[in-house]
Structure formats: structure tokens, C-alpha cells
Length: 277
Image (cartoon, rainbow, N blue to C red; front, side):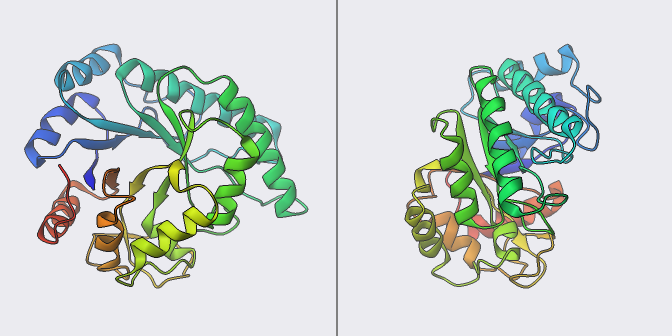
């Protein structure tokens, strides 16, 4: 797998750090992830520095959307702000040449049923995709905590099917920590095959565009989002099984860790032949 780093702004630091670590995949943010609105949006000079620093290089990049996104919120203001925030990220991503924007769809909290929340999220997703700029793909990321939607592969697949957007516009990003914490055990040597089979059974294997290749600090099914360095958590060698599986090996993956912890994770992946640079 082509595995890289999660790098906070300024964007100008990204090219040199990728070169230093010998990777060609990265994730960043394009605004303050804890707020709605144009807070922390990169200045034009910072955007230019990123584009110039990566010119001519085969690099894959993704921006992570705001952590406040909730396309199923009972409050129209939050739903609309979620759409506006993702559209703004997609616009900046298109300008600087990022390949994708990933996000969590939202929560069932406040609804009479999960069905009601899923129906509302599907409608807002359709509105969002209809207004997307050309270029970056929108990637739905799986979740694992509380009333978050998209914790299981069947639920992710349902959202993909119900939205009905083409694959070049809307895909999936699988976070291995989240999936394990949500109850899909990735700790065995067969994890890669089991994951590929589960996605294929739901008709969405080809929708998987990228990974957050995180290990998990807590046991399978803990429903807590606690990332660990690959090889140092409860998934263990299952991370290698996923990263080396034929369906996933050509894809980009990001270690959502500090740079120091990510270095250890990259060393573990390289040691076990799981890096495709």
C-alpha cells in the first residue's frame, strides 16, 4: 500500500516532509476542524507553496473535513453548515490539486429512529454531491462511536447505494481502527481477505479509494476512537494483512498519528513488506 502521513498546516511544510520520510501520500485539513466557517483556511501564498513544492511529483493527497459535520442533524442550520463546509473544502482541494476530501456523515441522535437519520443524511449527501466542483472525490469514512452512522459495512454500502452518485464523485475511505473498534475484528492474518469479502458482498469493494491505516488501542468492539501505531495495538499483524491484500495494496493509506509515531508505523510496514512507494 502507498502509505503516508497526516500533516497539519501550514501546507508549505508538506512537500519537504514527504521527501524527508520517503512517502508520496498525505492528509491535511483546509480549515479549523473544530469550527464551521472560514477559520484557518490556507492563505494564497501557502496554497501556492504546496502546489509548487509538489509540481511534477506523483503524490496523492486528501483533506479531512470538519469534525462538526452532521448531515443528519435535526437542526437545519447544522445540516446546511455541514454541506457548506464540505463544499468549501472541496473547492480549496480542487484549487491546490488534492485528490479527495473525506468526512464522517453524522449521527442518529435526535431522531426517532436510525432509519429517519439515514434518510435525511442520504438526501443531504445527494444535494452536496450535486453541487460539488470538478476534481476531488468525496470519500465517506466509517465511524465507531456512540450514535455515529456508518459504523458497519452494510450501513456504508446502503448510503452509497441510496445516494446513487457515480464512483468518480463518491467513494469510501476505510479506517481500520474505526472498523475494528466498531466490532469488525481485523486482528487475524485473514483480515484483508475478510474485509475484501465483506465489501464485495455489499457491492462496494470497488468504491474503496483509500485507507486510514491505523491500529487500535482498545479491544475489538470497544466503540472508542483511539488510534495506535501499526503493530502496537490490538489489530497487530492484521494491519499487514489489509495493506498487502491484492484489492487494497495499490491504494493510498494515511497514518493518522503524530509524525514521530508515524515514523515507527512506517518502519513496521516496511519491515513486513507492506509499503508500495
